[in-house]
Image (tube, rainbow, N blue to C red; front, top):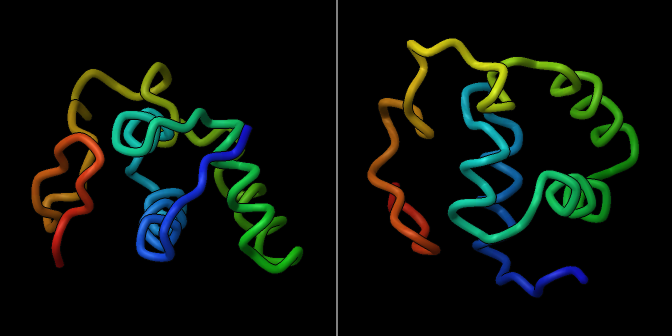
Length: 92
């Protein structure tokens, strides 16, 4: 079951999915959707060619999966991003 998101939340989910250093677990933590649901959102919201390009980029990428990351990478967010807490979207 796909949750309903505001336009701002969808934009943030897509932005986080595109970021190389943001793991799917961070999206799950902030928005409560699984990796598969994130993929479905990306498929639904993007042009087919953009979705294929994104899938090719993130498939198997160690930085997108917390279990595959090195122990040195211990944070969800980019150093330029403000704190993420629960379902609140960080301000830019």
